[in-house]
Length: 306
Image 1 (cartoon, rainbow, N blue to C red):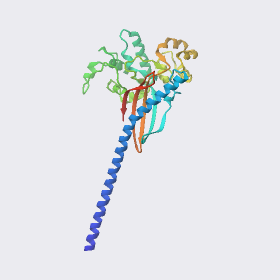
Image 2: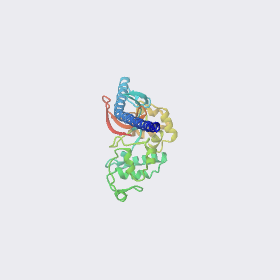
Image 3: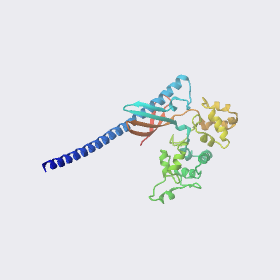
Image 4: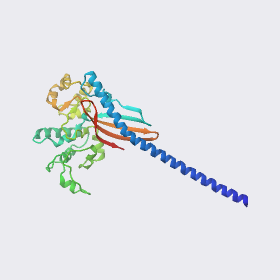
């Protein structure tokens, strides 16, 4: 009986020790994951500084070379892969926000109704080319303009007050593409499909397109006379050092003269998609930077970490 009791106590002790060991290991793994997650989140902010440094270095190199254009051949456009940063590895890609069409331009300039119509027509062409119903542009116009006059397929205050729960229409510029989820008809799928073609920077509108970085669909949307073939030729001839360089594309000469004030070859607004990995944990972030044309330092306009 003593031997049996001893064996029973020993068995219980072994079971308790094994359970304690398993629990300790779980807590250790959780602590390690928390530590790595905290490090990765902290390092994403350091990664923003790395993106700033790349943009500044690119501008300094351009000045030394006497160049004044931004193109996919520049330093900032090269992907950053497995760059050691603190205890983690950074992967990043910087994109030009000037290579996209600015939705805040739809608010228009007071007293310039004709130019506003041109920009609305361009946006509708872009939506159609991206296989998104162009009627959504009307709702977008109503969201960013300051009046309560509804576009044909748009929506003004009454529509948003009738929602559950009700909310107010902005009648103001968009602060980020995420704000599109509040606009009538803009599902997450639609936003994802359009995100590579549209931007909200600068948020006061008035932007011109960087022809060196624009997607062929965006170039095609600039004017009804720009066909898919012309857009492909423009892309093939990049980079352009000046706007006049586009005149060497014969079929674009006349169109280019008409659009001269609507495109450029340089940029100052950039977005950086950042991913920092610490051991098994990866944290991502999106930062939007405004690079100053003087010393090349950048202002952080937007940062969202995931």
